[in-house]
Image (cartoon, rainbow, N blue to C red; front, top):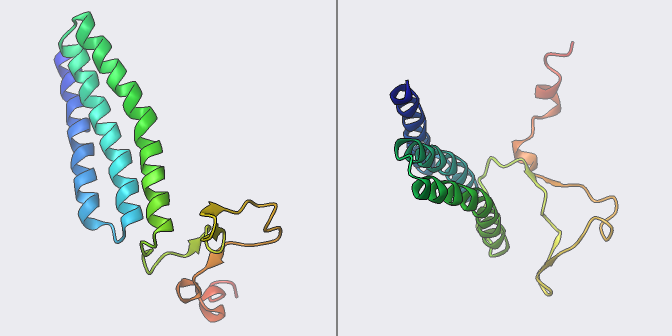
Length: 143
């Protein structure tokens, strides 16, 4: 029974890492690649570490596996957020199919700070108009 559980968890973990590597190739821009890679690889490595903890029932191995999973779950999303934020502020281009850019116009290049909602009352996210449907396309099904 334990072998079936280990086989299932390790297969799901390996497939998750495979999907992360395919996502690097298939996603159109840096931000989507970063998102896919961090989420899928964190899941995959976490599942493989759970398999290691089950396979080797020694307390030291289990403790180390749990500690690695804990720190991975805490640090990977924060690191991805900071990398994405730094790349946005340095001008890494968005994919041409991006519809909403919620940070457009909110970054002060002189102070290098984001301006909060209270400073921009009534401001709306920037939409890329070329990716939105025209009025004719939008209401075709609503006759």
